Length: 122
Image (cartoon, rainbow, N blue to C red):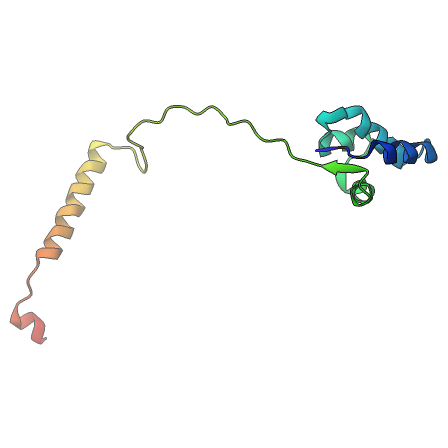
């Protein structure tokens, strides 16, 4: 967001540069008032398709203190109350539950497995 920072500088600049592109940009920003104007609106109002085409001019205005850049704090978005249990992963189906039980039993069997002396020697 951009707005006029030094009204005196802006007025003098606009008077000296009547009718040129830079003066038009200052007028657009001035018309936005204290609320300012965002990049997209400024670009469209200046008759350009890309902000990059007017950025060097805006950068010069910022450097000399004629305009200022500011951000508008975002209002917190309303959130839905969350449920205590979050659902993640695959939906539970009887097939998935049976598969999980089968895998769990194999893991449990592997953990409890005791190797024999013969297995260790080979």
